[in-house]
Image (cartoon, rainbow, N blue to C red; front, side, top):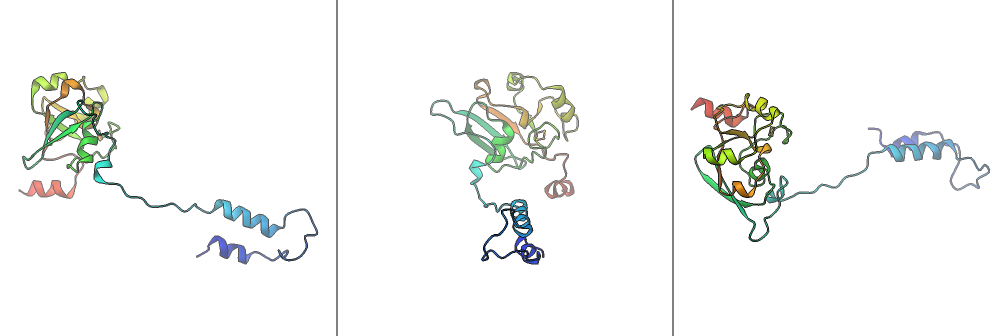
Length: 182
Ligand code: FES
C-alpha cells in the first residue's frame, strides 16, 4: 500500500536536511512531501451517543411537557413527555421505536407513516403539504387520518396525541417480510 511516508521515501534524494542549504528555493523533495502531507486524509475520532440523544429532540422544560403515545405493531403503548416543536420521527427514533425514516425526514419516502387514532386530534395538525400528500399516497395501509411522522411537530394543541405505527411500510425490511408470512 502506498502511504504518504512510503511515497516520500520513494522520491529521489535531491538534498539532505543535514547539509547546509545552498539555495533559498525549496527542494523538489520537500515540496512533494508538503503536497502529500496536505492531501493525506485527516484522522477522525470515533464517538458514540446514547439512544436518547438520537434524533433532534430536546428534554421538555418543567411544566411544558407534552404527552404523546405511540402504539407499536404489537399493540404496545409507549408514552413520552416531549417538547413543543419535536417531530414524531425524531421522538420515535430517540426512543428506539420501529420507525425507519429512510429519507431522513425530507418528505421523500413513506417509512415514517403514522395513523392518528383520534380524528379530532388529526384535525388539529396543520394540513399536509402537497409533497406530504404525494408521499402518503405511497404509504402502505393509508387511512383517512394518516400522516408522515417527520412532518408533524408537537404543539400544545397536540398534547395527548396517540398515533399507531402501521404494520408495514413501503421500504421493505426483513421485519416486514416476516409480517407478510404470518
Ligand atoms: S422520513 Fe421520509 S418522509 Fe418522513
